[in-house]
Structures are given as C-alpha cells and as structure tokens.
Image 1 (cartoon, rainbow, N blue to C red):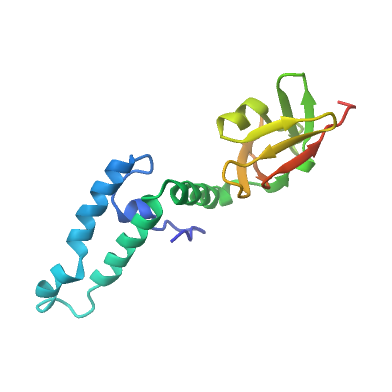
Image 2 (cartoon, rainbow, N blue to C red):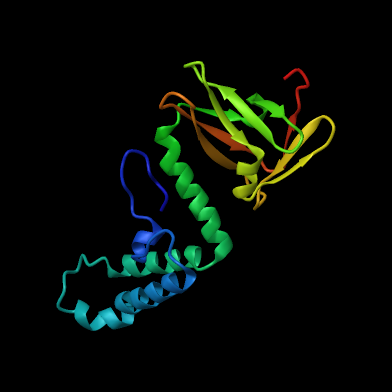
Length: 182
C-alpha cells in the first residue's frame, strides 16, 4: 500500500477518507462507516443484480487493513514514517549517514553539517532532533542519537542556498564521533 515511485497511490488515509493529521476518533468514525458500507453481508443482496467484476470484497479488505494500521498508534507512526520517506524519495540528491557529517559543538547545542556541491551546507542542530523525538546524549568523544521507536529513520535536509536536498539516514542507536578540530 506504500508504492509511490512516479505515481500517486492510494494511502490508508485515502481508504478511510480522512486527512493524514486526523485524530484517532475521526479515523475510528470513518472506519466504522466504511466497514458498514463495504461489509460483504450487506452487499450480498445488492450484488445479485450488480456487475460480477465488483471489487467490494477488495474494498472491504482495504478498509480492514487501513484500520489495523491507523487504529494503532505505534503502527500508524511507523506507517507515517514510511509514507514520508517514500514521498521524499524523488526530492533528494543523495543519501548521507550521520558519520559523514561534521559536528560543531558549543556546549549546549551542537550543529551537524554536510557540504553541498554549491558550496553551502545542509545542516541540522540538536534542538531540531529533540523536537522530532530523538534522544541525544554526549560523552567526551561522541554523540549518541537514539530513534524514538528503535527503527532506522531519515530526515530530509535542504541546502542553505540552492534547491538541493539530502536524506540523512539515522540508524537506531547511532554514535557519531566528535571532531575536536572544528
């Protein structure tokens, strides 16, 4: 359900006719309505006179699967993460790892940089990581970044000057050495 390459695909949000920022209550309400509309028992009477190529059973199964994913906060968060990553695939010039970035540490906040081919930088600071739910810790020679759900994640970073973007790949429990020469 997450195939995105060069075409617009139906998401689980589309299946349930809700926005991606819909509340749990909105998703549940839409699910209940859709499940009643597409339930095979209800459609059996109307199907006798309808087209034999009717896709109502498929639609019912899609509604069920959408609810399984979106009705659970953990599976929804994982789905949203995958959905964002798939949408961003065509927008990035390259994938980079944390180890490829330079770190500038001023004591309270550190900033990570990666040089763009235009000469400017892609950057992100520790406060942005924390807003996204990552746990950051520091010892004398390295910074550790833990993902909120212990799964690898990614963040798209724009260049400060041009239109290029890179995807920063974040492995679960990543550790980045601090370069004292910066």
